[in-house]
Length: 264
Length: 264
Image 1 (cartoon, chains in turn orange, red):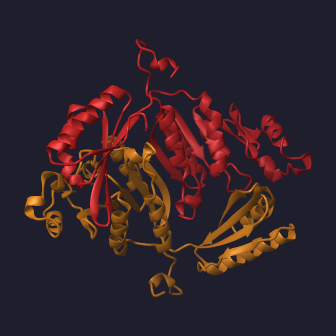
Image 2 (spheres, rainbow over the protein chains, first blue to last red):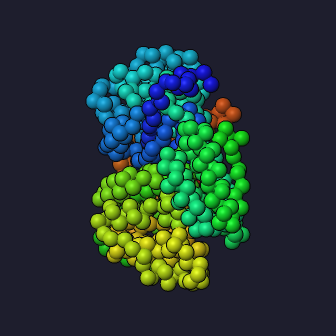
């Protein structure tokens, strides 16, 4: 760890928040099962950005504009996926320009990127549609199929195809501000959730700064529960885990740690 | 087909809309990959309800209240999942009561349902927490683990555990108003999306009442695209498909139908 936030004596870094906005009729009809938001959630947690909301909206300009403007006002970053391809239903770039109140036109930088893959004769009007970028946006390179994503203000606009989305997310990551990374510990208890509720609730009251979640599971009719504790401070997290384990054991339950704070 | 909406001469039924609200920190941290919203999307499409938005919010009362109130004002139905278990982080029922401005207390009907599974001595305070229901709500039976979901106004509150959610969704379905079912056809084209864009766009202009989406795919570096056409009127859908296929063929492309309007 070499980043400044880890040096003793410096003020604690501010929490950085984000929302994901998924755009596409095919998700809402059930035809396509959406996986990008889970990928982005994992990535943001790993780099120290706190994902606070996900929205999925249809390919409808008003819906996209309203969602972008609501989310960009509330969170440090908004990550959008979908709707930046070459067909008539790809309206994300135009909707983002409208949300920001800026013009949109073919961007020579985007055309230059696409020329790395396409001959001039292959730069058809449909493909040139993918070079339309709102004024003032920074481009995000697309190493897979070249047509770029972009970032305007605090909004990061990425493709919906998972492999391209992942490449764009990696490209944009070095330019993102991040906050404290939350560490987590998972404790397994082979008992019904209602049995762990009292010791969990007592521990939560004693450690209000550690987030504690309870996730029940049923297999072959046998209930069990995973308890997940999360905090930015590793020592505090360990103290909370030991306190919870002691309370669970005192209640006759048998807690078992599945993961340690460092992810092992 | 025996429902009135299929009889000739009757006015076309109104579109019925819905939103899904997923509640849970574990989704936003990436720890749990959310699948309930895709299951609900498939189900609503099949029964003739138009899913228009999905939101995922954390276990935070203000966030839940704001999302419930925003969504229930805009859509015919709101389906929530998650946060109705026995632990301190299960705050959905209280948040729903707050959103509707009604009191919440242990509901004797819910206790009666839970007595089918639990002896009185097993109805601990933690389990009794699951019998807290906002005033004025109708209960939704839970054949898996008994603790019920509920419906208040146009908001349907279900568990987050997928098997229980699916059982509650089946329970509540007969009481839901539905609209016209959209039929869909999928056409595969083994070409880049940019090549299908012009014929697709022309066909969309000729059939503005048929929704047309384009979903690109890359495998082993070879691009292909699936075109999905959706409409409530089967004949109109078939006309649009034939028109699109003719335009694709005229452009030198090779369309192949993957599914028919009846889903075969």
